[in-house]
Image 1 (cartoon, rainbow over the protein chains, first blue to last red):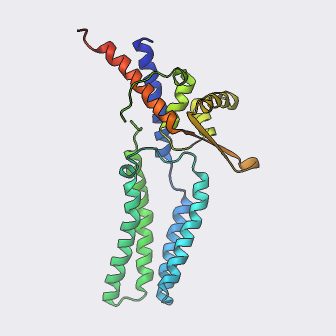
Image 2 (cartoon, rainbow over the protein chains, first blue to last red):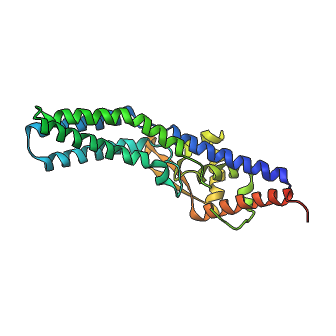
Image 3 (spheres, helix red, strand yellow):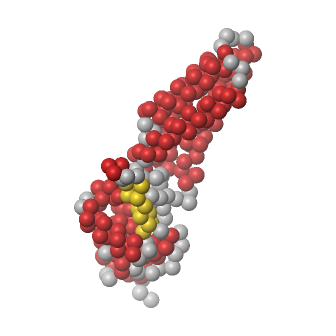
Length: 150
Length: 102
């Protein structure tokens, strides 16, 4: 084999890997998943203003999220980018729910201290709004971090 | 990933090299995604996948039934090692050719 053959083969390898990474980066969470998650956040937050049973709503929320995962998994064509640095690429997606939960907790504490009516409802709306508005930026940040495995 | 260079004739065939390179960047890839990405027919891809599967380089998993039946492909650990060694061998060939003669 000569050098030009080797270069051509390596270029073919890079092209193939770039195609897989491009596919993984192009993938976006579907609107119904985002809407379903935001609706769950608001519904559970509103309910907590009227029924004081946090454990029940925690279970309902977790079951709702688990149900949303079923069709989500079914439509995924290529699993997100194989790499031993997966967490380094996808940590923004993990940071998002933590940040969103912080929005709820801080808003609820502030509203509770201020004696505002329906503190959980307002905090829930803020939380869902933060989730929906931050998700596109987080997905874009994750897509930028995807690289072919070396 | 550091892997001792080892040229692999089976992987080096252009079509199989493209398939393996695509799979190397994925966990599981759907058959149709690989077919569309490489512009191949079902039968041509099946043939190449069978060869790779026979060598233990690719794992094939079929899920669902009827119209929702899907086939997923994955590079096995053995295939991944062979691919890394092959890529290293190609880089070695280029490095040897471009290194100044002693």
